Length: 378
Image 1 (cartoon, rainbow, N blue to C red):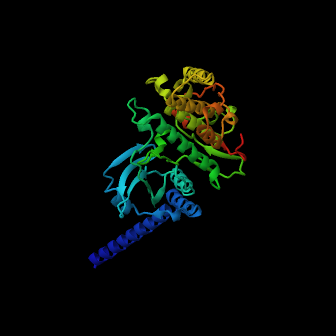
Image 2: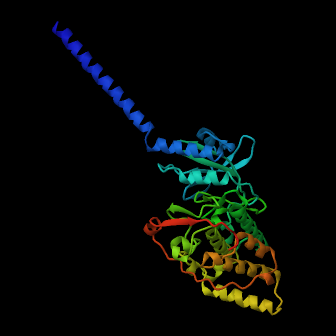
């Protein structure tokens, strides 16, 4: 009898413990399902539907692994993830960017998908599909066999002649013109640099990496955004300080100008110096050299076509990096200058380059205010 009582008590205790464990497990699971990560996933899903991004093919993560052969061939590494070569079932080559797993709200992923899903232009990279599976996020792009522009302009033995570089500069300008004025909603890229210009088999440039991009309604004058936008050496001065003016699509113009100066050969003037800011990237000697050559050309001194193309790129670049945003041309004007005669391009004022050098702590701490303009005239 005593033994029976012990068994009954033991069973009761075991039952109570088991029920308690089950209840706690259910509560914990419920909390997790409604926690920050789940809410973030729901927010991303909602935004993807809102932007109509489901028109792009959505892949399962298992399909991404199959496409990339379990991420066998790595093409590159960026701040937001790694890029792998892949093959679709129909044999088409693709580049798959797998974003770094994070507990963030998925802003970079949303920016990329929402921005690029609104575009259709020969000079904008084509997004073929995406993967969003909780914290597994990937983007599937058309494959660019010649990789990115930075592989060509930093090498003394660059296989690209100045005419090819010029065509690339024109293509990027047309792509930015489309982003700023050709879409129903203006798209400010905020990270134009050689690494984000991809080249197809015929060296046609494609603007890529829209992780920092902002969609700006043209009637909206100011959009407040926390955090920095861009890469040191290409960032417009107004992004560091509103004393230089409002941040707008003209900030892309500045970044483009810095890139074009580099494409034209500005790096020869600075050797192997580290790029920390604009003023030590392109010193005064470049401006003086270009202005002097332009004045000689205006005096009808004969020069070869390559030198004329180079000087045209320098002149356009210096117009684009004017310190005050309103002094910079629109991308439509940039295309016009590049495709016109060099005689029609006025000598730009000497830019006062004063971008500060920032440490990592400073870069992550300041706020940026994005001001979109109602007109493209300035």
